[in-house]
Length: 308
Ligand code: KPL
Image (cartoon, rainbow, N blue to C red; front, side, top):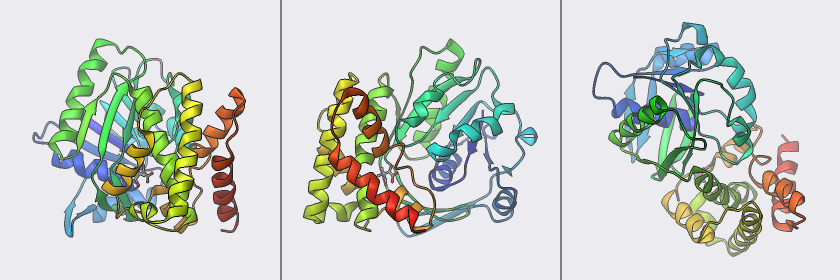
């Protein structure tokens, strides 16, 4: 089996480390694909550094910047930000063989439009609440354990449905809680509620995930933003129980993590606010619902981005 991780950011490196650990046979290979040639060169010379609870593990994996040099892949994990997915899919089109799986790992729901991006390759959507902090090229801190769920939105062909459990086995063997779900759409919304309630607020309060629970104002904003999002979900026929409690549990499980949005802001990078709280506002508009809490979060994060 050959798995290619496209986008070696925090989550990409975390998955690479997990799959590397979960690989027991030399017939399994993991490669990295990065559009940035300098970074790919650096990954080849310096390898990946994975930190967990004060212990650092180093290993090497082949990194490429030219998709034409990569061997046929069984699965492509698309680990780029949601606003980079379109370009990334064009970039790795040569690798999308008919029998391969395209695994989308983005936050938010904007990437759901790629459901039938390829005629042959099957699309898998995944959610994860693993906390990962990017420390530099190939260098990741695994800051909190979570859960990873993968599933097909459309009925897969037999070869695709046989391949997914084999990939999930490697993730489990690598030490993360991963599983296949029949209801990935609900899972994506459940994760969306987590991101609605955590990401923008960690930017506004400039704090780690766990610290949000200690700030009364943040807890109030979290509750209001999630309530609005849950209402939008219900208009879309998505019913998720205990969205707020689930989000608070993720804050506890990833207490020491810096959310991906705060990592973006600290590096003065574009955030995924449009794919997260922005999508709630957009869909609320379709259903005639008001979203004052999410609108205020989007406005404040955009103001911060505008000051870069
Ligand atoms: O998905 C995340 C993110 O930071 O984007 C969580 C689960 C909130 C972990 O930080």
